[in-house]
Length: 409
Image 1 (cartoon, one colour):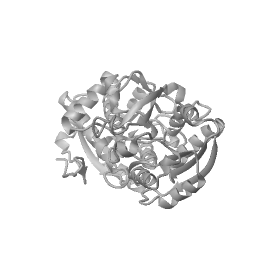
Image 2: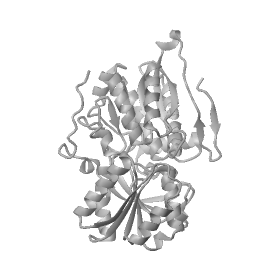
Image 3: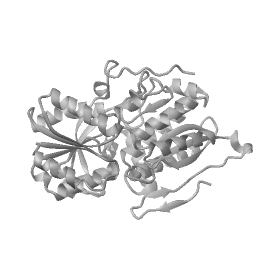
Image 4: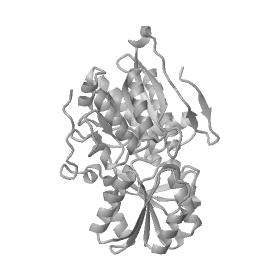
C-alpha cells in the first residue's frame, strides 16, 4: 500500500516514493497525513530517522483506533532538501487530501511548505527547522515549530562559551550559506560580541559542499581560539572530518552549535570527543523523563537503534496533531490551530508548550560535550549533557520577534 522500501547498509531505510490511494468508499473512514521529508541529499540521514518516528507513531495511534475514530493513512515525498521540490510536494499532497503536512530537515524547506499551507489553510508542523525565520519573519498562522531555533541555541551557549574560553576569545565561523546558517551565525555573532569576544573570520559555505579544505586552511591561518562550525547533516560530517585531518583541533576549540545524533554516529567518539554542542533533545533524557523513556523504548524495539532529535520532533508532531484534533473534535484546520495555540503538554520532558503568538515550541535546550572512546558505551552513546537552559528564558521576546501572524480563517 505504501510503496517500495530499500534497506540501507547502515540499517536505515529509504522510501523512494510512497503514496496512498484511498477509494471514495473508504475516504470517510480515514484521515490522510503528508510526510514531506529529505530522503536524499545532505540531510537524508535525518529524514530517514524522522520517517521512522512518523510511521511508528502512526501505527501506535492506529492501534488505538486512530484519530476521532478515523484510521491514519499517509503519503511520503522526498524534499531532496530543496525548497522548490518541497513546495511542489506540498501542493501535490494537499491535492491528494492531506489534512496535515509535516516533516523536513531544512529551514528553507520548512518556510516553503509553510507558505503553501497558509495559502491552502492546511496545518503544517515543521520538522527539523532551526532558523529564527521559521517562527519569525516567515511565520504563519497555520504553521508550528517544536524544534528550537538559532536564537535559543546562541543564548543557551553564550555563558558556556565565556566560561570555557574567556570574554576576550577570538572566533572564526564556517556556516551554511542559506537561511538557517545565516541566522544562526548572526545570533552567535551577536552574543559573542556582546560578551566581549572578537570575530576574526566569517566564511559562508555552499549547502552540499564535499570539500571544506580551502575554507579550513583560511581558518588555520586566522588562528582563532574557537572555530564555530554551523553545518548540518553530511556537510557537518565532512567538515569536521576535514578539520580533524588538518589537525585544527590541536590549535583551537571546535563548537558545533546544533547537533543531531546521525551526524555524530558516523564520526564516532574518536572525532566527537570534546566537541561542544547543543541539542533540543537527546536519548539519554530517557533516564529522567517517562515520555522520553517510552519513546526511546518503542523506537529501539522496532528499529534496534537510538532515535535522534529529528525523530523526536516527528514523534511530537504526530502525537500533538492527534491530541489537538481530539480536543477540537474536528479535523478542520482552523479549529486544530486554535487547539494547539498555547497548549501545554509533557510528551518528552517536563512542561512543554506551543506559544500562542509565534507558534514556537518552548522547552529546554541542552548543552553537551562529546564523549571519549573510553567513556562511550556503544555507537549511540556519544554525548554527556553538561547543562540545561530553560525554554522560556531562551525564547525571543515580542520585541525580539515582532511577528504578526495572519487572522485565523
